[in-house]
Image (cartoon, rainbow, N blue to C red):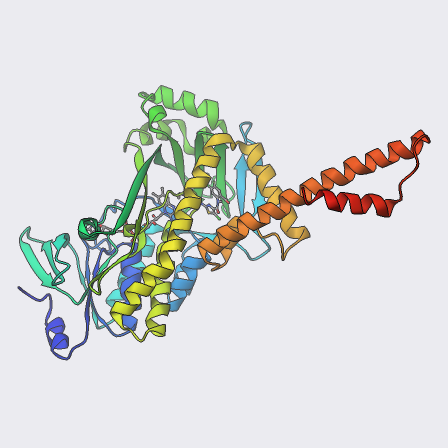
Length: 474
Ligand code: FAD
Ligand code: EGU
C-alpha cells in the first residue's frame, strides 16, 4: 500500500485525520475547501484530467443557475464574491410565446435575482481554491473502482493505468449521480435506494452574439414553455446564450435531418431560429445525442464512521427547479454546521448529517420531479405567466402569509422539507379563501335578489355573515 504524498504520511503519524474526497466536480472541490479549512488532511481523487489544463472540457451542462443556498456555501469558504463577479444576474424570467412575444416575470423584489454561472469556470475556481490550502492534495486521473467499508482502503486506476490502493480515515463520496462510492452502500442491509429515468432528454445549443452583443435581453432566464417540449436559455459572459431543449427521447428520435430540425423549430420555437441561425441549428442538433436525466434517492447517507455521500452521489435530481448544485453546496454547509455542533466527532457527525439532511434532499428531489410532471402536463406560456403572476400578486397582498414556493426554495435557506409543508399549508389557506369568496358572492347575490323580491322577510347582514362563517365548517 502506498500513500499519495509525503505530507499525508507525516500527518497520519501526527494523527491528523486523512479525508479522501472522491470526485473533484462542483461539490467535491467545494467540499475539499470546507474540510481543508477545518484542518483535515484532504486528498481529492478525480477520474478526469485537470480541467484547468484541459483544452476541451466535456461537462454535463454549460451553465447553471446559482441561487441563495449555493451562494451561502461559497461565502463560507470566501468564494462568493469571486464567483458572483464572474456570473450574470437574472432578475426575471422572460417567457416566449409561440408568436415570439416576450413577457418578463420578476423573480422577486428588486435585488432578488439568480445567477448564470459557467460550470467549467466554477469548477476551475473551486479546484484552485482547494489547491491553495497546504493541507490539500489534488489527484487527477484517479478513477475509484471500489473501496472497503471495513478498512477504508480504496482501489483506483492511476494516471498510467496501474492499480493503486490508498487508505483514508474517511471517504467522502462526491462522485456524482453514478457514484462508485455508493456501490458499497447497495450491499448493506437497510439501505434504501431508488433511481428513475424520465422519458425526456436534453440537448444544448449555442445562440451566438448578434452584432457583437447578446442576441436577447441578457439579464433574464429565457423560457419557451410548450407542454412536453420546453426550451430554456441562460446567458454566458462571452455574450452567447446556452439554450437547453427538453423533449421526450421518442421525439428526438423522430428528427433525422437538418430540414426536420428546422421544421420542428418553425413549429414550436420560431423566434429562436434566426437567433441561433439556420445552419448552426442544423449542425448543432446532431453534434451530440440527447442526454438522459435521472433522479436518485437513497438513505442513509453514511456508512459507519467510514463514509458519507454528498451532492449528486446522494441525491441526483431532475433539473426542473435549478437546485441540483445548490442542494449539493448546501450539503457541504449543513455537514460543516454539524461538525461545529458535535466537535468533529466523525461517527456522530455522519449519523446526524443523515438524520437531518435526508428529508430535505428527498423533498427537493420530489419537488423537482413534481415540477417536471406539471410542466409537461399543461404548462404553455399563458398558463406559466398566469401561475407566476398569481404567486406574485398573492405574495404582494399577504407578504407574511403567502410566500411562493420557488421563493422559499431559491431565495432562503428554509429547509426544503419545511418549504414543502408550508406550501401545502398555504395551498389550504388559498383554497379556503377562494371558497369563502365564492360563498360570499353567492350569498350576497342571493341576498340582493331576496331583498328585491319583497316577498320574503329580509335577513340582516350580520345574520347572513354568521351563516356564511358556519358554512366554512362543512
Ligand atoms: P458532478 O458534477 O457529476 O461531479 C462528479 C465528479 O466526480 C466528476 O468530476 C466526475 O468526473 C467525478 N467522478 C465520477 N466517478 C468517479 C470515480 N469513480 N472516481 C473518481 N472521480 C469520479 N443545478 C443547479 O443548482 N442549477 C442549475 O441551473 C442546474 N441546471 C442543470 C441542468 C442540467 C441539464 C443538468 C443535467 C443538471 C443541472 N443542475 C443544476 C444539477 C447540477 O449539474 C448537479 O447537481 C451538480 O453538477 C452536482 O455536482 P456533483 O459534484 O455532486 O456531481
Ligand atoms: C432548468 C434547466 C422556470 C437551468 C422551473 C422556473 C432550469 C435551470 C422554475 C437549466 C422553469 C422551471 C427555477 C429557478 C430554474 C422559474 C424555479 C430551471 C434553472 C420553479 C441549465 N428554475 N431553472 N422554477 O421559476 O424555481 O423560473 O439548465 F422553466 S431557476 Cl423548469 Cl428560480
